[in-house]
Image (cartoon, rainbow, N blue to C red):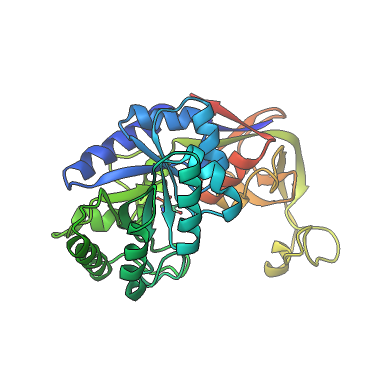
Length: 356
Ligand SMILES: *Cc1c(COP(=O)(O)O)cnc(C)c1O
């Protein structure tokens, strides 16, 4: 079996570092666990690093963490589905919301379960994913404040996710201004003025004025040590807490260029050999197959640690040019792995998760 190797100490270091760094700016962190499907070992490490709030987009992941006894406040960071409201009230302390109809249902269910459910209202600042339009915010707040067993604990926004709009100083100023207006009008002090995700990192570190923004929701920055607009490596953080390992199951000298008429691959994509000109003289490479494919991982998100080349993948094999290395059958190759590929590997039952 191929596996994801997960270094818990590196994740802990990243979380602690970010927590300290942002604490100086009076910004708290909700640690986001959706990338790792709410894996309890990882969630527990985040709480050990001092993160008291964990957020996930999937109620199933939150239930998993609670069942495993992870001690944290849990935040559902995706708009609740009506069909999941009983589970959400039972398991989540906070949810992010934009729909009055849904919040009313949360209120009814919270009453039924005799619980207080907190909500953060998300505001659309231009990225066109979730959020109430800014001119509708006041009306929604007014209605929400009347609902029983619902506590409004903040407002939030999310950028650089759908349209790719960046969280620049102007956006942040506008968002902070909106929060300020609402706080003043209704005489409330929000625990969460939650300005965004890991893409907000550069802004949070470098802006001279953070306004009244006091929270970020961070997944990528903690788990992959990357953030900001460019998703650049964050200094002093580990980018390699996750590595992917797969095993050589075929190793032969084969011609570099295929033999026959080339069309598309198994996924209907143009063959990579359609683009390269057939060399005058074909040559042999050390051609290896690894025991993982697109069902397990996304090969475009892998970067070999050794100087070998990924030629491509089918559902069940990675095809590798081993160049000058003398590997043998059964040897393992190790890869750095990006967000999307981790998500796939975490979700795949054929990839084991090995903690070190
Ligand atoms: C995924 C998500 C985050 C975290 O994003 P990262 O870029 O991984 O830090 C924050 N907020 C919301 C609403 C999300 O869906």
